[in-house]
Amino acid sequence: MPPGIGQAVQRTRSKKMSQQKNIAADNACKAARIRPNLFSFRPPDGGVVYLLDTSDGLALVDTGFLRHRNSITRAMTSLDLDPRRISIGFVSHFHADHVGGMGWWRKRFGFPVAAHETAVQAMAKPDLIATGAFMPYAGLNEQFAKCAVDITLRGGETIIRGGIRFRIIYAPGHCVSSIHILVSDMIFVGDTIFANGGIGWTDVHWGSNPEDYVETLDRLRKFIGCLALPAHGDPFVLSDRVISKAVKTAAFHIPFEHGMGCPRPPSRYRNRRRRIG
Image (tube, rainbow, N blue to C red):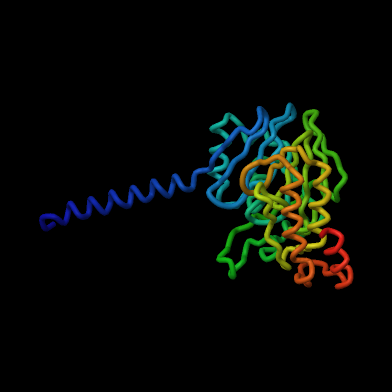
């Protein structure tokens, strides 16, 4: 090998190794303890995963993208949380960035999955369009592990694990399958609302409905002061200011988004806009 070539090759190899380390770091899942028995796991992209530790095992809320399963599992074990203790998995809504891996987790660790009745068919097939796994216009082409739903929800149910009550609230708007889960003074809100008052992406493919969205947000006012646990971003305390900002954004879409799920007559749109200001 000519002089200097070996050094150049070595530099190239070192650079590649450095890049690989950076990629590994970027793919790491950030784990955090929110409360003594509540933990969050944030992969580099996709949704936040939550674990609530009970005397009857771990309650899992969402799993994120399927491709993050290993990094999330490692993050759990780093906090001495054994995934084999998961006793139930809740689906906040059927989007791939939140539950694309739920089928894998269910099969691997053997726990029942609870989801709204409108999620059953989309997750079993799975429906890659409805779940947002395949969105070429947004550059997404994700895998979705097919997943059976063991506990079908409609809203209004209370599930008890280890003495902790999980109250299920149907929350359509962002997605036809969205639910909120109230646990004491905490509420898992999925993609309904975020800390900055933002709302989830609305799209006909997954049954968004801006009018339902406004009604769902209005119902959250009953839980002002609760700790909201969103599927993206940081936890925050629900306030009238944050909810009102979200309502204003959702209401803006009411006259324009015919076809986003279940459109209503224009007269009802106008009345709704007047009533909410």
